[in-house]
Length: 264
Length: 190
Ligand SMILES: [Cu+2]
Image (cartoon, rainbow over all chains, first blue to last red; front, side, top):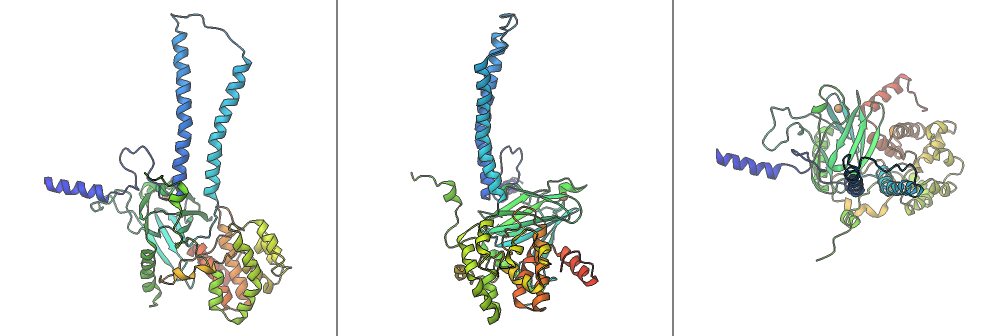
């Protein structure tokens, strides 16, 4: 019994991914794309100012409470006007806001911009309540398509090491270190395709194709969940992205493609 | 202790595995007949202009416009390409649209030969620079069917448009549009 526990623990710590949420997690998941790295860095940048302001404001607050205590100093000073301090407290916050806005907009526009041509396109189509993925770059007719549905592993079903409510039967396999275009859309209601460690959250809107591009920096398995309330099973349509090396990606795709197309 | 790598160093890809492999132009040369090759040489200056500019901007297009067939290209470069194209004849629309968005990378072919499948897809299109790619897909679909209408059902130079729209459009949409074309209820300019 004890040994089983140890084995289970060991398995858990080695298999458990760092790219899914963990119990009582406060910070971000590890960045897998430059985009997420940028988001984390921006967060830290802004947090610097946040702490600064927090300390300053609480210092003023505590000082005011202390010095104008109703027993010690029942009649406070009645200043109604002070040009210098009014100028300072207008200019200074706007400078701080600028220091926050500049990196923020820089990140926003660099995430938006599609600079390079992607190497593959993956279509993620949201359904109530599962996802369909299409890899159509290798099609030679309208019918042949590497298309599969991705359902969550039911709650009573997961095997040892699988994450509850996060694992799916068919993962999205993508090559690492490759520019990938993801076209997100929906077939019924609004969904959202979101993978925290890749810094992507893209709404799936029926009748519209939203594009987002990612560049996964390291091989691994990344977990995400539907992020737009879409019905009863909103919580049960997770996303699992598996980044593999380019060679493995090539063999995976051609293995899945050949039986379908009937070509050898 | 060595200096910690900067962010850009940390995230830069090794030289040999450059992330971009879209070479629709190159592929077209391989697959097609001599007629297309001669057409390609006409396009060569335009392609060179585009290669020198990593991100295709409107400025690039204006410098490129006189090189390619002078009368049609401005029409295609506008964002309402499919609509405006309807005014020009079908024959002209196809080649003009063809050059509009390629960024050929000829030097890349060496490393890719080893793989079974080629990693390539519809290139980023300056006509559709935003997140919303709905019209990108639709335009590519129309471009393909215009191309086949002008050059014949199996014209090899239309293959890449087929690849592009298949990459971009959900299969369901394609099926629906094909059905609509058969019924004559397709809502776009064909
Ligand atoms: Cu959903």
